[in-house]
Image (cartoon, rainbow, N blue to C red; front, side, top):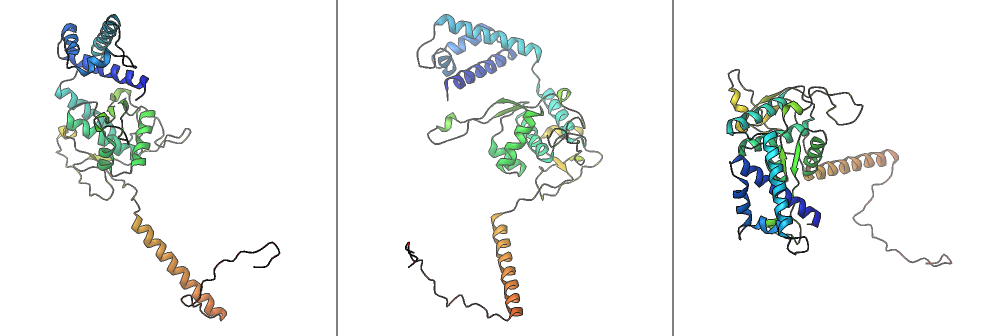
Length: 303
């Protein structure tokens, strides 16, 4: 991790812990005491420069006070939600997502649905979602998931709070982390037909087929039950995925490609044999034909 990325990660962690302390009713002195303890890893990181040297105590105190003030302002702007309010928040987002006029494409919709279900399971509005979880929950490939995530973030349908740190050679497992996303408020989301689902400028808006609340994720080929008229409104907050009348594009496996190639080769051989019969040419005996090795040709044309 570079020096700038390190400072950004430490600052974001300080903001989160300070906001949690403010929501819990802590005072600045209590939060400061926790960070000043000997076993506080975050406190040691704050008090250390990029090169490992100690920061001046006055600079550390100024940084902590500035972070605390910023956390207080954020909490006042967006008060913390209790469990019931978080459930209603997620339900409202999923209601917008289930609207037939939702301007999200099919892949974007299933990815957003998976993140919303993850938020309902964790009872938060900013869940951490590993790529492995999203590919398993949506049935999409890794490239399709990455593309849908990037498009949703660019269009404001999803907010990325923190980037993930994937595992790589030479990197410790404990240093890896999943990306954190936040479900935006429905008031800030685009309404029906306000932007094209494909994301291309100038393209006419496309309206996806209607979606209903179901108890199985949007995976191609999976049967989707239709809820009855007496479905409880609270089922939106139970983490149940959305069901769509449109089926996802089926993935072609390697075995299917091999079988298709073999079939094409067989058809070509049959056509070639029919042409040879019409022209009166003998069928080639490839089994007994010797393979002639390549010979070096000299400059005078002799072998």
